[in-house]
Image 1 (cartoon, rainbow, N blue to C red):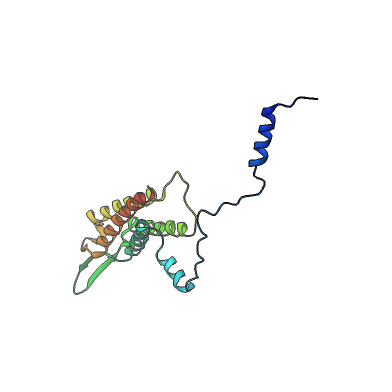
Image 2 (image 1 turned 90 degrees about the vertical axis):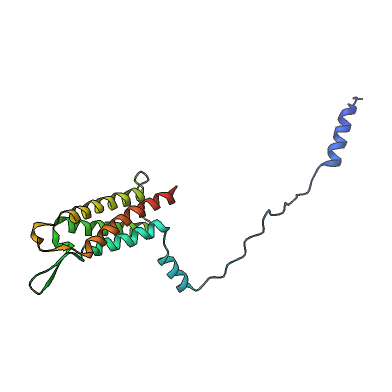
Length: 182
């Protein structure tokens, strides 16, 4: 007869007595989230369309819109023989037109981001907004300091100041966007 090892029988008895043969289910760590009832679609859609992005993006949108529209305000005004004359920024030459297109480019940039089209990762949107704002500020300062010779009779109007404030607003919007990206 073969002799059995006493340790082997103890090991076999231990495994047979303590082995788990049934499955064990662990409880879920968190209960499932409650289902949210859908809100009124009109109100939620309106809030989503109006309140897009952060403060920097909203400020960029407003400053870009004001910058584009300020090209059609009176940059220079003066009075002649009984008549008051005002010259729009669009009619002051190339710089007035460039300021309009900078404002338009800012609006397109914000609209593309809202549509889900982002710039490449190597070109952050905040940097583009700061560059556009700086360019518009330089153009506005040139027109503020140097009145074209064609308009020797006119002084500075409110439109050039609106242009300058909105161009500086673009720079601030870009800085706010940069702080939001961090």
